Image (cartoon, rainbow, N blue to C red; front, side, top):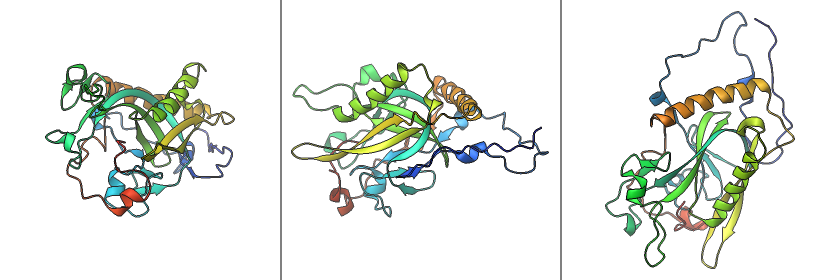
Length: 274
């Protein structure tokens, strides 16, 4: 066993929050004591914290968590409010559907939160095509009750998390699909480079909302050792997905909401369905 400690030192991230898991490249403890891996980790043992871009309807905003205002980021693992942009690693991406039942929305009366990891089967309402709550528009152009989603599994300095992007807005869809196209046409893994999560503002005549934009920091190449670690976790995540066992801290999102606070409306519009 070598005594050399490998330290990843990418270029500084000058503005925002650097979430790169640099400590994962360091060695903790004596070199002659092997780090024991938990080989009995089962797919349903994996529960991922969430990283979210705060909107007016986000729970941390509604619950008046200190510093939680629309446009900032919230990491459930540490209950931290973070400044955007943020830098991290993307391990895996997959599409799905999500309906977060909200008591404040009359159209959600009698509904329960339902998450579909694969866009095929929801954990509450079953077959997504039959259900249609996240995909079907009303006869008079009403938006679906839920939304299509893209889930990014990201590795941060606080561990592996889930970043769920709800495609309930055409501006969000465009920025996310641009990133997906870049990856698909580059013949690289998601974790070949650090990913930057930038927040942009969208608006129309009535509302203002916040749009996540993801892009690679292509001048920085993730070291081979770190890429191998990402690939290992990618295999575990994919196995849990295939078995329908993967869950995150948003899965059981509360359906009973507190009354909207002033923090909900000072930045961002409370009716934007993110």
